[in-house]
Image 1 (tube, one colour):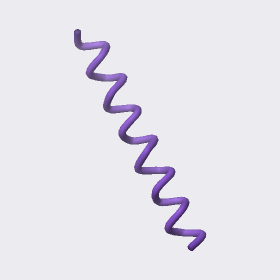
Image 2 (tube, one colour; image 1 turned 45 degrees about the vertical axis):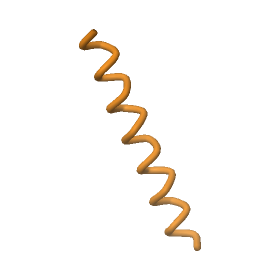
Image 3 (cartoon, helix red, strand yellow; image 1 turned 90 degrees about the vertical axis):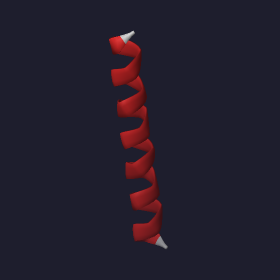
Amino acid sequence: MQHCLVYKVIKSEHKIKIVRIWTHYE
């Protein structure tokens, strides 16, 4: 259960990084 939560947090952080990269290139 905890492992799944950690995985979700990592995924959300990755999404934020992608969004930041996109906004940086805009």
